[in-house]
Amino acid sequence: MTTYWLSDFCVLINSFNIIPFNNKDKNEDFNALTRLIILLTICLYIKYRNEEILMGGLISILCTVIIYLLFTKKSFDTYISEPAVISKNEHPIQTESEHRTKKDIQNLTLTNSIYETGLRSNFSPNKLF
Image (cartoon, rainbow, N blue to C red):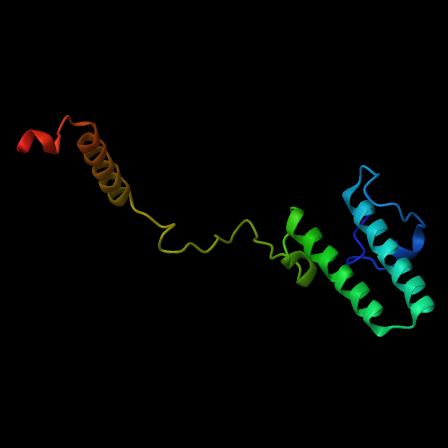
């Protein structure tokens, strides 16, 4: 599996594949799409000499990066910093909602069962009138 070009910029230069979305590897597909955008941007800029073409290329590359980050399992934090490692001796920090006592869980179960019992009753407001 190849890496995405945000992790290793040299990946864009190592291959000349510019046909996107014909590979089994998602990273290689997005790298090929980026190469195609860069190639088209350079060719169109040389032909028309218009700075808006360069902006269009940059915006297209930015859009592909956003789409890649949204549709992969990796989070944005992977590219920003290294993940924290918790040693076996340390306990993860729990928030108040995660830290429940046995009594809280029993009360929650009792409340849910009373609520469910009320939902299953045969009470009908039409019987009152």
